Structure formats: C-alpha cells, structure tokens
Length: 312
Image (cartoon, rainbow, N blue to C red; front, top):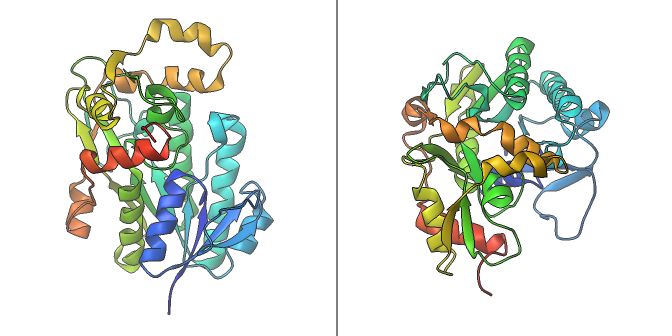
C-alpha cells in the first residue's frame, strides 16, 4: 500500500518540489495551506490550516508515515516568534503517528569562517541569529526522540520563487535580466542546491525510511561554485540577454535595510559570501548510490523562465 506524507510548505520551494517527487515515487501526499487558491496541485490532498496551529497539524497528520517540515515565515518576518513553535508542532504530530520528520537544513548552522568543509556531524557554532534558530530546531528534533532525517544544502534555486538569494538578491523576478548581481567575494566558493534535485533526494531518503538511523543527517553537495564567479556567469548566460555581472554593493545595503526586513537578513548572511563552506555528501552517496544532479545548463533556463526573467 502507498505510504502517506504530510508536507508543510507544499506551496513553497522545497516543500513543493518534495511533494512532486514523492508523488512520482508513489506516495500519497497531503498539504496544509493557510489559504486555498486556484491552481493548487490537484494531486495533493489539501487541508486548510496553519502550521502554527498544533490541532490543525495533528489533524492533517493523522495516520501519516512521514512529515516534510518545509515551512518558513514568508520574507524572513518574525522568525524568532514562529519558527520554533512550528517545528514543535511537527514533532508532536510525528510522535503521535510514529512518523519520520524530514527537515530541509542549511549551511547556516555552521560558522563559515571556521568550517570550510562541513561533515554531517561537524561541530555547529552558528555565527548568525538565523543560524542559531536553525541549530535549535535540530536540537529539539534530536531531543524529542522522534524519527528524523535532516538534509542540509546550500542556497536554493529553482522554478519556484521564494526566500532565495537568486530571486531576492541577484535578479528581479518578472523582469528580463539586464545584469546579474553577484554577492560573492572574489575567489570565495559557494554551495548551490537546485530544488527539484533536493526534492528528489528527500523522496529517495523517505523511500528507504527503515534503513535510516533514528536520527539521520546527510549533506547535499549540489553545485559547488569554486571561485564564486561561475554561478553568476551561468545565470547571465542562461538569461539569453547578454547580461553583465556586477558585484553587490555591500557597503550601501545597511541604509536600504532600514526599510527592508529582507535586506537585513541578507546582510547578516554576508559571512557565507566571504568564506567558503562546502558540504561533504559522501554519506549520502554511500546510502543512495548517487546524489541527484541537474547540470546548470539545464537548471538555470528553467529557473529563470519560471521567475519571468527570460524573453517571452
């Protein structure tokens, strides 16, 4: 019989791609959404509710085998108030159903200045507020006793816009790309993760649920931009518009950030553009045999078209 998964954040980037991959793998997929809107995926069994409402999460999760916790406050707003209560609700639902929680993790748990290559069990000394919250999420999952799998990845990009550097700091959704803004320092490597590949990886991990440790952590290597210039150049090329690449004027951002929560969050993440942090995926490859990978030449045109950044 098909297994059932509840995806929190199924209308977003990671959650949406994980839901699609799990459907392809034969799972029954439920989604929890604050609002029902036209055009929502009809293959997903939708329930209206909020991830902040424990009763709503418990109702939606009744009888599931897994919960993908891919929900985040939009635009980085009120992270301190919302993120930890939401993960606590997913933990409660997982324990009530003996379901495995699948969490998309990030590089922000690590201090990039001291960890150029991160193993899944490398010490976590987050240097940012967001990183500390991320670290606390993982601590609560481990302490809960629930079955958990965490997949940490670099900065996301893909055909679904959201809280990402590409759509918020490098190009402007809905406009043709005239120039690509590159936040990286010269010569500093950076990790990128294509969302459909991340979603496929979650599906493969959950397919092998019973083979996983009770608390499992893996790293998704994705695309490693070794000198900090390759990804931006690939975006410019994929735009089909002879776009130029320019540096991000970091010194000017603090003034603009007085009026933008998103910019404040982006400024805090500057350390990950000044120091390289690569994720070691050997344990993931040992388990799955390979890491799903779409070449940039295929991934970026799809991404830019979805963002409305390419010629009609």
